[in-house]
Structure formats: structure tokens, C-alpha cells
Image (cartoon, rainbow, N blue to C red; front, side):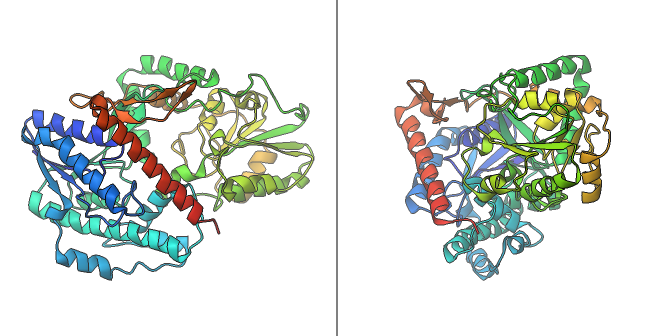
Length: 501
């Protein structure tokens, strides 16, 4: 089988190690493997949005040194420059990159490929800014991303013609350097494996997971994989799911950051009214699922802020109700309006806002609530597991699984939250969800150790600075650390230069 690995960015960890490991596995299984890197060809990439020439040079040289010892073992290394041409350059230059709103940007397509969504997704991942001011500087940043996506679409055509792959491997799939690959090769009927990782601990351990022909954020594919993992051993999966919910409540590792570790167990707001119909809203980090695609645009409100504002404004009509908003802890350091404007919403004695850094216990709120309202956070699943009626607003990975009320209109939402005597909805899908998040669904490294190292400075632990195999040479470890700092500088610069509307 001919397998093509398309990996444009050597500075991302553990990303690059995962791709090298998969390439070596394929080669050892007897496949013909071509590993294609950027070679400085793209107009912009996720790690280098400002298109720093020095950043590109270091990235190119890193690939050469990382892959040199494997090319002797039969892995063919090429770059996008081997597939580029003056014709591609001309088409990229002539593509109409103009837009005057974020909606117009989302509508940008090239040969049926959603290049606008790809550009916006990369920008939001770098800045967490959902509504940037469209200055000339901002448009220039987006222009680079759009052109990178268009170029990647055209390069995919040339790779298809010259390499004739049976399967293509990419990472994540959302960005301008990867989304066009997924779209183009799937249109040609070629299988695309999208690799991702999930943490096995909080100190740099990972396993890789493969999403076949689908973005990791696809709701339907997530639920298909969830059911598949459950069917392997339902009895064992039930026990693991119970462990997931127990660990979440106890602020122990359960597949994600520990968002509740600084909360005080049993603590409720001082103004909690036990005689009221207590409605508790749990919002989510809206930026995490922005610009994925039309599947995630199916929602009652254009934003969570609009939805929460509507619920707050209902309070006058329902004198027996108290509404509490628990802001997601992942937003506590976010300065953009989709977080800060939550504190400016309607002031009313029966409307209460609990900041993301509050010591009030998420699970005490769940246990005391009459109705839990979720905007997609996993607390919605946990509340359903705890026997609470949950109303889901918008799209989430657990949409349609049968354990949430899912109103189809604003009027239905209002009556469901404020009027109806809601019974908890239970479905085995609650346990299936918990099992999938917790289960051993991925693979360890085989040839290249992509688990990461961190630096301990007193009680402070840095984010991941290098992969284990990368850090065997002291220069590799510190180069990786410096590139991470450089990426962070570019992100901070973009945040500084590009305000919100």
C-alpha cells in the first residue's frame, strides 16, 4: 500500500512525533511511505501565523535532522516544493481573498473546500478571539491563512497525481494546512487517517488516536466510536464509566485538566434559595468548538452570551425561579467579550453569576439544582448521571444521545426550563460517554517516543517543552523550548494587535 504522510510543522509537540511514529509503523509493515513536509512553501501555518522566515528555516532544518535517520530505512522525504509550480502560485495569487465580515469569511470556498472555516479555526485557536476587528492588519493575517488553504488544496491535487496514495495521514484536520487535504482526498475516495492525541496524565503522557475519514470534532463520528468502544466489553466499560464520573467529582484525572481542583467541596452560593425553582446554567469555552463547520452552527442562539441573556431576561415572568450561571473555569483568564460581557448582563435579585475562579463547587450546584442547563460542557453529562434533568442548548458531542431535553425553539426552551416539571432522562449513552473519555482507546508509541518532558521550577511546572526522543540531545530539548516560546510570542502579538469588534 502507498501511504503518504503530510506533516507541515515540525515545531508542534507531540504532533510531529506522532506522525513520525505512524510513518515508521507503516514502513515496518511493508508499506511504501512518503513523508511530505512544508519546506517553507506555505503562506502561513498554525505555529507561524506571521510567516517569520527564520521560524520557517528552523522548522525546515528540524525536519531534515529528524527524518534523516529514517530515510535510510526507506521512508521517502519530500517537501511541498517538489509538487509546487508557477501555475499554483498564479492561482493562489488570483484567488479572491476579500471579505468584510466573519460570516463572509466562513463562506469562502475553493473548489468545494471550506478554506474560510479553516482560516478562522486557526486564528481562533491562536488567539481565542471570536470576533476580531477587521483592520487591514487582521485581514492580512487572514489572507495568509486563506492562501495557505488554497495552496494546500492545489498541492493535494499534485500529490494525488504524482504519488497516487492509497491512504493519507494528517494531524487534527481543522487547519489551513490540513483541512484541504482531508476534503480533497475524501472527494477522491482515498482514505484519510486523522491523528490526534489524548493525555494519559497531567505531566506529559499521551496516547495517539486515529479518526478515520472524519474530523475529531465530528459529532456523528464521535458517537460511532463511543458505541464501538462500549461494545468491546460492556461490563468492563460500565465500571470504567463509573470511575470517570467518580474521578471528575473528586478532582482526580479523568482525561482532561482538573477544572474543579480549587473549588471547595460542598460549597454553595451564600444566596442559595432552597424554596425556589433553581436553574443552574453551565456555559462552555465557546472558542474550543468555533469554526469547525456547519454541523456546529446548528443552535438556538448565535452565541452563548445571547442565550444566557435571554434566559436572564425571562426571570421577571417566573417569580418562583432563581437562575445561577456557573462560568466555565477555562474562561477565567480570557479578556474577550464572550466572557467579560457575561458580568454585564441583567442585574436582578434572582439572577446570580458565579465567576470561573470561584470556590463554589460545581457538583454542589448540580446536586442542589432543579434544572441544569448546558451549553455543551461535560457537566451536562455528569448532571444526567447524577439524576438531574438537563436541558442542552446548541450542539455538543452528546447531542441526540437521549439523556438531555433538546428544545427546538426558543419558546420551547423557555417553557422547558421555567415551567415543566422535568423528570431526569436516563440512557445507557451516559455510561458510554463516560467510558469513551476514560477508556484506553489509543496507542502508545512504537518507534518514536512522543511523550513529553516538562520543567519543574519549585512548585511550578511548565507546559510540555520537548518530546522524550527529541530531548535525548540537549540541543533538541532547548530548541523545542525556544520554539514554543516563539510560538507563544506570536500569539500574544496577535492578541495585542487585533482587538475585538
